[in-house]
Every structure is written in structure tokens, then in C-alpha cells.
Image 1 (cartoon, rainbow, N blue to C red):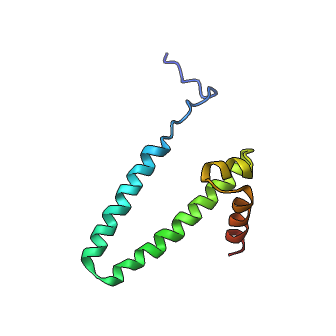
Image 2: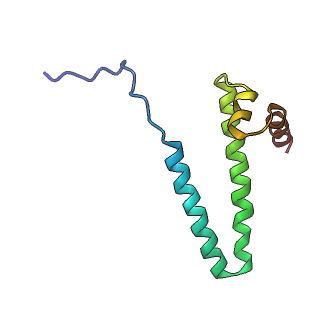
Image 3: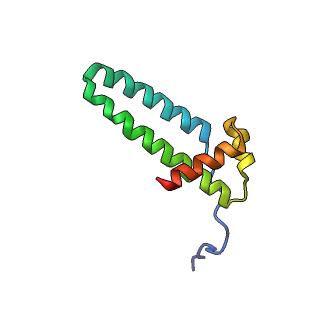
Length: 96
């Protein structure tokens, strides 16, 4: 008789390599810029969408960090701004 796997055991922690993934995204955006520059001026509209998506992703990350117990000061140190700037940034984005 085969033994069933222990489903109560914790799953191994997932490793997220943020800097490597961010590097991939940066290279992709640069390549997009080169391609859009070869196309036509209307192709610049994609950057408006990308900018909004980046702002939304940053906001989601900041809210998740707050939920995880990090402070505005913790985030401010990482961003190189004051904790008041982080607070204002979140307030502006929540209002829009």
C-alpha cells in the first residue's frame, strides 16, 4: 500500500528574487523604448499606461508592507524620502 503525502506539512518558503526580476523588467522597458522610438509618436501612449501600472504596483507593495507591520519610516529609508513623503504619496493615490 502506498503512503499518501503529509498534506499538513508546511510548504517550503518561496524564494522571490526581487532585484533579478526588477532587472528583467528594466531591460524590457528599455527595449520597449527603443522599439517605440522606431515606430511612431502614437506608440508613446504605452508609457502612460506603464507609468500608471508602476504607481499602482508601488502602492500595492506599500500597503502590503504596512499590513506586514513595517512603518512609513521603514519604507521612507528604502525610497530615500521622508516618512511624511511616503504618507502623502499613499494618501494621494488612495484619493484618486
